[in-house]
Image 1 (cartoon, one colour):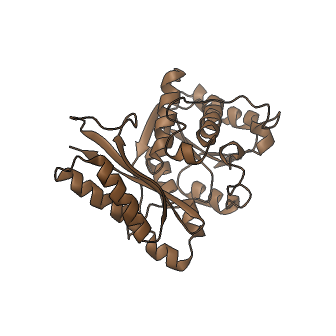
Image 2 (cartoon, rainbow, N blue to C red):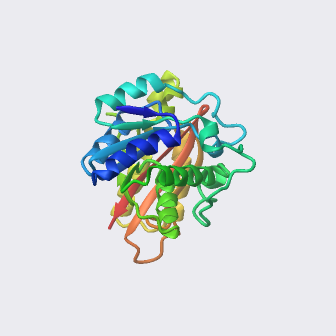
Image 3 (cartoon, rainbow, N blue to C red):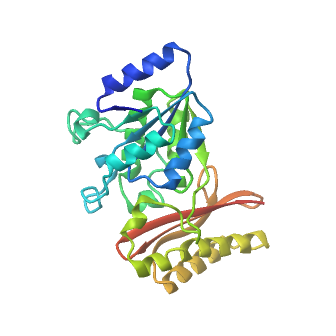
Length: 282
């Protein structure tokens, strides 16, 4: 596996592969890799000749009081995992490589409508940071396909919309969430959980599953389901941010006859913010 720290170095590798007519898949990450990330790499490898991964903790998507400075940075261990799992190139730039004029004067990409609701309402500017850095990566790598997990489904929709609106010739592949044996969605931030919090954390997915079953059995009062979900989270020891039922493809409130839905939740457990979702097809 080749590791590039600069845009020019990475483009040199990619140009060589392009000259041979090889397809390129790209998987962006912030590092501290777990089995869910490795599954994304595997899915990318099935669909392209070369797999490029990035590890970059993007300051633009962190708020003033969030965990940018303390976010786990495990580049050496991550590099070994990527090399062992068929990744051909790792792009691990410094902040100045992507934001050479600093954050204040950096050009930004904003996806109107999807960026300021749900997680975007709780984390102002977060999805502008996500869209901006992913667009930068897309311009640098110019992949044929990019692979994202479905745990952060709002992020997935933001990126899909950006690709569509900016006419980028990239296929976005979404991969179902990889879970621990007890149902907890794998996340780099799960390591923040204390032992007792880790035992409680799977309740988030269990409460989502219960709402899912109610809908499959005919419940259509989504407001009531959301209220019940919030209360169940409180009862379990969470501080809920939101619990909501939305249309899967645009996050608008469901209307009669809509059959492609998604239940989404975000909640704090101590100092750790967890997100999860479950799709519904009726």
